[in-house]
Amino acid sequence: MRLLILDRDGVINEESDHFVKSPAEWKPIPGSLEAIASAYQFGFTIIVVSNQSGLSRGLFNIDQLNKIHSQMLSEVAKLGGRIEAVFFCPHGPEGRCRCRKPKPGLLLDVGNRLNVNLNQATFIGDRASDIEAGQSVGAKFILVETGRGAETKSSFVSDPELLIHADLAAAVKWLVRVQ
Image (cartoon, rainbow, N blue to C red; front, side, top):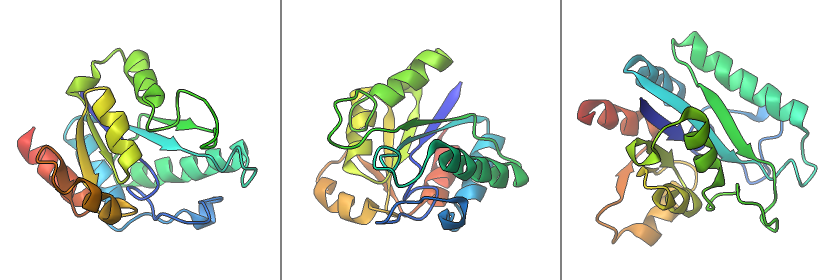
């Protein structure tokens, strides 16, 4: 299995300092949905992993989150793609859960449920917490400069192992060429 794991906010859709709380607020980054469809058509199984502390903060409920994800899945499907599953952490930063990135819990759940070795996976994200989570399970990591990626890049610029692309479309274009 060729596994592609994606962070959501800042990678697939526009980041919001006020949280994405409804389908109306969910705005895909230009080219991101087409990139997901392309990766799927090239044989990747695509999983989304996302911290969603807005749930614990009471900013939205699980029904709203499910509607946001349904919209995302539907828009990707219209382009001929498929997201196999969405894994999310509902806890806030002060929680002591094992699933909130940078902890590896969400990624380990993906590996267990799909029965796949995560060091064969590629994880694309825009934050230091994504990098740390991906590295902790041995996944290949790609940083995108969308969302919080540009500011994250400045902290990791001296890391020769870190792959950096402008956005999800550029990262997927590179990924399908090298795989």
